[in-house]
Image 1 (cartoon, rainbow, N blue to C red):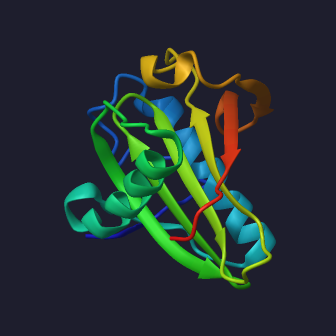
Image 2 (cartoon, rainbow, N blue to C red):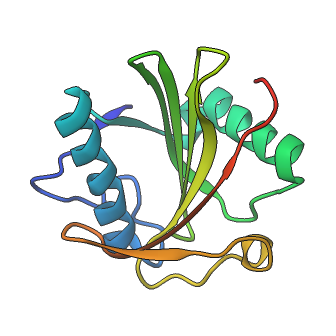
Length: 154
């Protein structure tokens, strides 16, 4: 069952098994606020069991581009298109959020972003490969993030 993320009343619905559930919920709400304010889009997530195709697409890009396999269990995911950009998000039990920005025009931006919920450690599979910058968020506390540019076509 899909869930429209409410950034005014942050909820841990769907994220309860995460050891950093409140921070991960804040991170998810932060993304929902961004898309609502910038694009007028309601950020809607599905349980991982209902979003297997989206999760596989994200994992395929990670494997092909950087030979990365995420060890944490996916809890939720979403995929949508705004202004000719395909976006996908996967939220993991560890507190990790991965997003794919994939412009549908050949010359557009394409990247994978990683965000770590406040209180989680950098996952071992990312620690030696990426540097994480910090940013403050009213909804999510301190977010650590990194990214890489996608070179292939997916």
